[in-house]
Image (cartoon, rainbow, N blue to C red; front, top):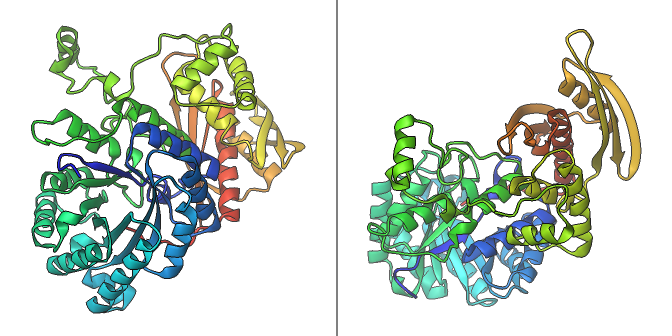
Amino acid sequence: MSNDRVYIFDTTLRDGEQSPGASMNTGEKLRLATQLEKLGVDVIEAGFPAASEGDFEAVSRIAQKLTQCEVAGLARASKHDIDRAWGAVQHAAKPKIHTFIATSDIHLEYKLKMSREEVLKNAVEAVKYAKSFTDSVEFSAEDGSRSDRDFLCKIFGAAIEAGATVVNLPDTVGYAIPSEFGELVRYVIENTPNMHKAILSVHCHNDLGLATANTIAAISNGARQAEVTINGIGERAGNTSLEEVVMAIHTRGNYLPVNTNIQTQYIHPSSRLVSMITGMMVQPNKAIVGANAFAHEAGIHQDGMLKNPMTYEIMRPETVGLNRSTLVLGKHSGRHALRSRLKDMGYDLSDEELKMVFERFKDLADKKKHVVDEDLEVIVTEGILRIADIFKLEYIHVTCGNTVMPMASIKMSINGRSVKDADYGNGPIDAAFNAIAKLTGAESELLRFSVSALTGGTDAQGEVTVRLRENGLMALGKGADPDIITASAKAYINGLNRLEYLKTHPVETREML
């Protein structure tokens, strides 16, 4: 293995999906996994197969589809979990089993109620059992950053001896400070028996906003695998952001003399896809992929940019995929032009899927002059990835103004059956939501409602995100349309569909890395 290569282990589909309300269905996971492979990640942690039948199915289908990167299934240090993980990844071109157990004294005492010797024994047995299925086995020491460093070295050494090819040091609760974490990584590398036979990986959480900093500190001190997610999504405050780590390495080669296999031009499209699928908006000032990341408003900045872009930009927007296509799509564009543009964006659609997308594209092109990439992503996501939805909007009509009570008439398809009703509200959107709730029998609570524009211009599609809660379940919904009221109705219905998905695909409580 090359000492200047940093392997990128993407866990968007596993740890990222554990963000509240970010659950994805199997079709969405497959689409994202395909994009991650195109992006060039080395390992995709596709899920936790023992957690639910839905996770098992999704990991299995991803494993069967991908051909370039490793596909990993997460498993606790138990034969049952490892059997399920192998059952899901066994048909992958490059299968991997990722097994873990907690190693910090606080976890041993209060969660596992085990001694260090028992944990060591379980870890070795788990790695050996996983190794009987595949040569590619990763072992993780959960809550590693709060574990005794000598015990870490001991258990890592034993795991490597048992057959682990990667040992992972997670900052599970986001507790570490960069200088401290970098020093711990150096200590583990220098004091773990047979460390030269394995790769040391790190998996950092962002509770103190230091996940990327800790990961960079770890790489500077010898770690050679980074476990990350697109947009930094994940449990609690999230995970290390793939785009931040990759572009730090790409931009600061003088300080970080390492490289990755990431095709950086696909970073922004990948970020956008994750946002589209999960309904989790990227904050405008997010590094690398935020809407303002390459925006300059201050006059002195604009003047400098006109003279030389490097005065205020340390990387070019084209590097992360923000270059604009010269192919303009409008109402006169044909199927061939649409198929070509979609293929450039990474969507290789069947004839039937293209027909469905083309119809939606023509409808949108009649409403706005130019259809841009962001519009096409919405069309594909809504038309292809959500075709199995229980609730679908067929018709919406609202009456509102400062002299009338707002009213909405809604026609929907529920399990293929058309129904319609009307209701009043404090405003047109409230009236639409009330009518939809009446038709669907929804009892969910609206926790969040936000609106943004996909692009500039008065004819831009409005993008609405809602967060719903019902009986302890939370789901995000997203909708887009040139008409903001229609977009709101679509978002609400999408959220209700996601709630229905969660009801029928329960996910067990998961231990976290």
